[in-house]
Length: 253
Image: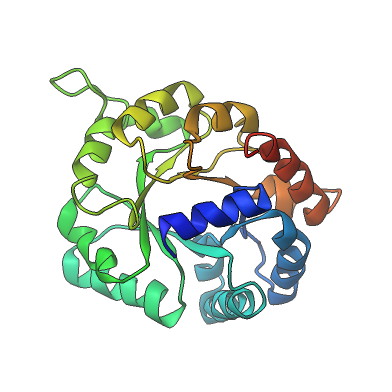
């Protein structure tokens, strides 16, 4: 899926909501119910592979069947494997095969720590994306990502500026946590026309309004991921997704 196609879908639905399918214990029936209830309000789904890997072969089977179900029922939805892979080239190539060939995801989250050769195999696939970790929402992001370089810029900015040369805006997006909205302006300075995948809204305390205000471009270029606040909602996933989508919609007129 290209940047243009994804942005067109975002404005058609007036939603940039991505639903995180982080389920424990994993259940294909539950995933199907969540997908059915939330699909009208979302443009993307993002399973965190850790929840499925922890369940062994049955978890992997559930993940494959979930992807197949979404592909069949909702082929226009963008699918992200939240796998946070990052390894040397030949290993990265096998990870890319796993998520782009065997399971047909549109994107996979990748760590930049080992540099270009650990990311390059994911970039070989047509109409597939790398979602590169840049500025994450966890408290310990302070340990490295906000450290200052010799030029005064933080490490996360160096990551973005370097990775911009690895692939164009139809293949490379950045993961930026919603819990640091004040930093999103700096991210946008370094990546003015790239998609941002923004986790951290909901249970982690991120705010839809702040994220949309600082991160959205005139084209869109933003996916807001919500996991626990939707899949664990006492009102039901559909009602929670509808509420988040309503908050987003006024920024996508």
